[in-house]
Each structure stands twice: as C-alpha cells, then as structure tokens.
Length: 112
Image (cartoon, rainbow, N blue to C red; front, side, top):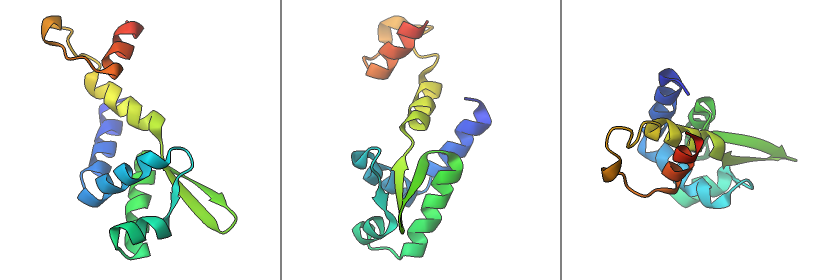
C-alpha cells in the first residue's frame, strides 16, 4: 500500500458515521447488510447511508454484491487488514523491547 492509498482510506474513515458504519458491518462478515438495515439502526435516511457507503466503496474499505433486488454491503477485510499492516509495517524495528503483543504484529514479524 502506498501513502495515497492509505490517505484515501483514512479520509473515508475520518467521518464519524462512516466509521460507525464500518463497525456496524464488521459482525456481518462476508454476508453484509442492506442499506435499509443500516439506515434503521442509525435512524438515518437511506440516501444519507448510501452516500456514506459510496465513499467507503470508493476507498476500497467496503464492497457490495447484488442478490435480486437487494444490495448487500460488507467490509473488505483484506483492505482493512492491509491498512493496519501499513501502519505497523515498521513497528518495533528500532526498539523491540517496547513492542506490544498484537496478532497482526506477529504476522508481520513472521513475514520478515
């Protein structure tokens, strides 16, 4: 991941409602959820939720799939994981004794 790609994802996450939508979608896994359910949960108009979802889709953090007349939105876990890896790619390379234990860090260390 390059800096511009990371900035695009952080820009999408920098809005409170978009961050809430991501957190809402995470438990649904690859099944996802429809705009109606998201809108009802947050008590927002459908068009407002759709606008936020579109920004998240452009950033690559959310994907969608159509099933008949319904469009399901789900977190792109690969993109989210890549963003976390980007943040932590140099973690503890200067001072390993202060490194905290995170599963993602173990994966990164195993890649080195």
